[in-house]
Length: 354
Image (cartoon, rainbow, N blue to C red; front, side, top):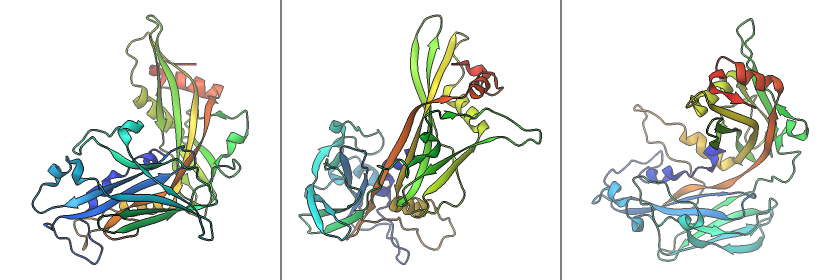
């Protein structure tokens, strides 16, 4: 999911938070707090774990410190992942190498923080859904040891992971805009099977099209991701093995208006042939993190809300869990849907063609 696959670097901003029964010292002496972020995905050929410092110093501006790489990274970490059987027996120990994410092809976005270097720890060992994986971080200067354990979501069995309609080779998308006589708008829903170890899930419908000027011949391929589905029914993280994603048909049309924008001229057509559908899932720990951090509190709250962390150790916080995805590419649109996109009052000015 887009939310799942984005780095939760905001964890670093929480270095000054205390637990529910502690008070916050606004001008605390300098203190390192380790921040860990890693999502293991069986579909990836390389796995990255980001380990940084969060900091507070009564004598320096946090904004100034954020610009200095030395204020954000440790120079003396030993990082390994231990592969364990379900009984807890050690299968193998995997050392992680320190790499620069910019060199790996993941440049850091510009902002208040420094841009280079952008370190993380990497390993390429294939993940086994029958095993669990324990991250162990040792600071060789302080002797502090931090750790976290996660299972791996199994994405091997298509009967247990995916949109049910994908099993039909003739599956097409149908969401023609219809408003009934009673004013009720039609809805589209997708039933999905997911592994029972999943804590969070999200469905993306990717619209692919080519902006083409039929006079000049200039063409540009584009896409936009619709993810405004609601979960229908009682999704029980870690227990449910099926969910239903639902949205009003009108939402697709409004989304395309925003995503495509008005044509530059009457000569610009939008040629749309198919869509892609991607189903993302993440582990229970991610769901707990998202639930806790969505409760913002308020000015009348008695205490500062702590951030969720599943990393064990001294002065450490973060998230180490599992994620994966499955997808269906080049899904066609029904004739009624194509006709509706061309002629509907919401989208007819977009010059969509098939």
